[in-house]
Amino acid sequence: MRRFVVICPEATASDDFLLDDLPGTSGRLDVGLRCMRAALLFSHGIRRDVVVYVVLGGGPRAPRVVRVSGAAARFVRPDERSLALLAKKVLASRVDTAAGGFVDVRPGVALASGGLEQVIADLGGATAYVLEESAPDIRDVADLESRDVAFFLGDHLGFDDATRAHLGAMGVSAVGVGPVSVHAEDAVAIVSNELDRRDARRHTPR
Image (tube, rainbow, N blue to C red; front, side, top):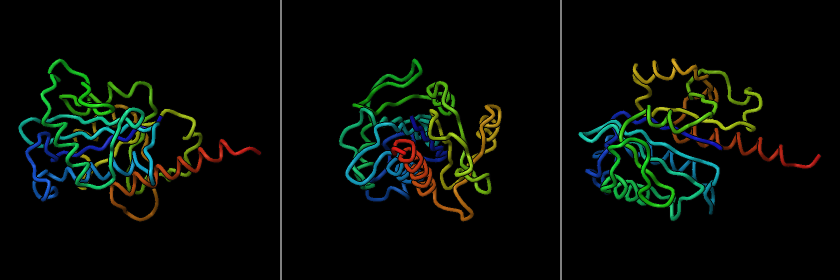
């Protein structure tokens, strides 16, 4: 299982944004949605072994987390407007998340009140990594493809001090994706490609 946790400290946790001006009205929820697309979707298909968490820290309803599981999700489309419409519907839903934990809103899509702590509780025994610039290259991490893994990354703002402290207390290892700084969704795509290559080698007869 692959899990990606995208932390968006200013992205709105409500449906109060405009589809025609997503970057300007959502606190850059668009960054989280592009990371979701990069993690879940490939050409003409969806990765069934991927779960994406988008942690939303902006607005009066924050913090909240949207979780999308490729194993059960349906009709997840690659264009940004469709993903934004999905997010808008999920964030507008009246499901009761006050008791804690994730509540299913539609097949494969769930919502939780709370922030990073909700994600960590949901990860189980996954081996956690944080994507950081200048960290050791992911290509040098042994046996990555044989584990249940979770990758934490920030949006264009990166991690705040509280998030860094929380991840540090977990003992999360830092990995990088190369010598050049890339956008968050490109980092997700690179990680996915690396894992795809390793999986292919594991299943190729010798």
